[in-house]
Image (cartoon, rainbow, N blue to C red; front, side, top):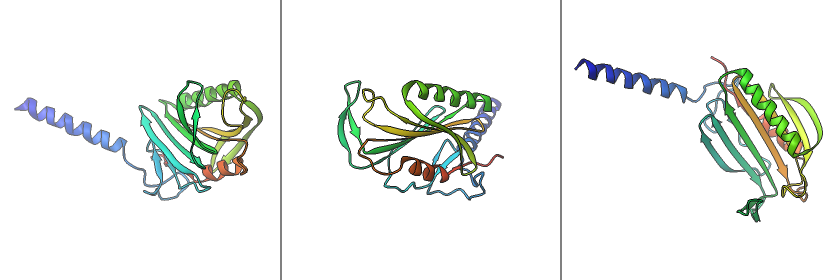
Length: 196
């Protein structure tokens, strides 16, 4: 009987811990009340409806990693470098959020992403910018014509607490809107969970 009681206590404690880990925040670090209308990633990042014709196409989570993607325009059939048929849009915005054990590890992930970007893109500008009180490293670049159907892009990278954040906006050469303006507006409407 005693073993059953201890076992039940352990199960209840585990369930409470798991439930508290997955709770939606109540307030963002910028003081905004957390909205159930936002897309919440990792219980730490809330994304408002982005506008600009961006349509949510994907929102998934794996262990310590969260991914969401939006697109602009009608889907076209496209065969990627691996020979797989996929959908190609006029423009796309991809958000990646990864969890780390420490703030230092989160920053190391950001540094690694910046190094990878330098090896894959032709970077035309690098800047430090603040969006909704969060500082980002912003890269503007073109894609090598033989590696991507997109012509150019702009990406922003930051570490927030123990989280690394990457947001990439890429578009085809026929896209006539300002990618930096779209990225800026998107990031100004991202919210981060307030610390306890």
